[in-house]
Amino acid sequence: MRHVIEPTDLSADEINELIAVAEDIELNREKYSSLCRGKILAALFYEPSTRTRLSFESAMLALGGSVIGFASSEVSSASKGESVADTIRVVSCYADICAIRHSKEGAALVAAKYSHIPVINAGDGGHEHPTQTYTDLLTIHSTKKRLDGLTIGLCGDLKFGRTVHSLIKALSLYQNNNFILVSPGELRAPDYITALLDSRGRRYEQTAELEASINRMDILYMTRVQKERFFNEEDYIRLKDAYILDRKKLSCANDDLVVMHPLPRVNEISMDVDKDPRAKYFAQVQNGKYVRMALILKLLGQQSGVRAC
Image (cartoon, rainbow, N blue to C red; front, side, top):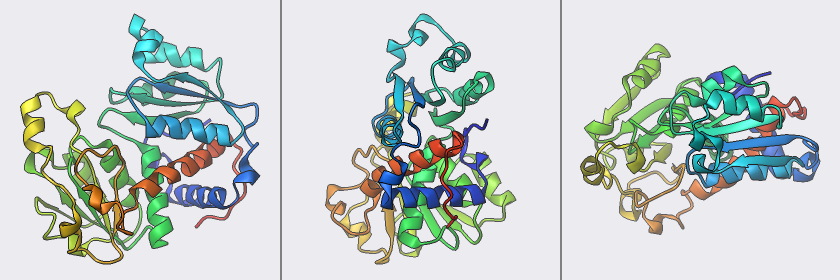
């Protein structure tokens, strides 16, 4: 039994295999439509979610399985004080695999420790979001046809953004990737992230200027400033509009730039960018379903034999 708590719980070869299966699912959906018949996914969402929760549920249903769970801690026994450890031990009696989202960092790891079924971290606080990372990697591979030799710009909230932390960890596994970290000083990437890049010999720079560096990027990963991660509203209001990508800024970029965003968006990407062919954030949403289907199959031992990319 395996769990996926952070993106590097899968090796680079396994991630490549996961992407290959996800791309095959997109082309041959019927082939996968009954591989999880009789299997149950427990979706335990202690924290609000739209895309991730619906994506997991849609993925399991598309595989022929069933879904149980809750969409808020208020409608679970957590509201009575039940611990994550006890909840997962109970849920293990009902389901074959679990996806858990929680506001507290490390909650998914606790669940994995006490679970009798595979656990997938669907986001824990500002820490990790591995399935969003696999979704992002699939989106990059489908557009760039590779995951190495890229210059990746990450812009916005790099301090609290779990999607950013997870994506940097995963992309740093691949050779010759460079990172441009764009943020205000208060929202710079944590030291453990830059230390990881140093340890893997990956080049990176930290800057507060998006327009000055956008023309060097193959990928631009925009993020929102997350109000729910701030301890006071004044800091949030001061920083929330630090970076807004619009058509004027995008005019400075290369024609083959890929613009991504984990969503939800507030106003950090202007709606006039949506029609630009470089905007791939809604394609990311669709890719999320395919990659979660592939991951469920892998963890349940149902993965079809597809050659890695």
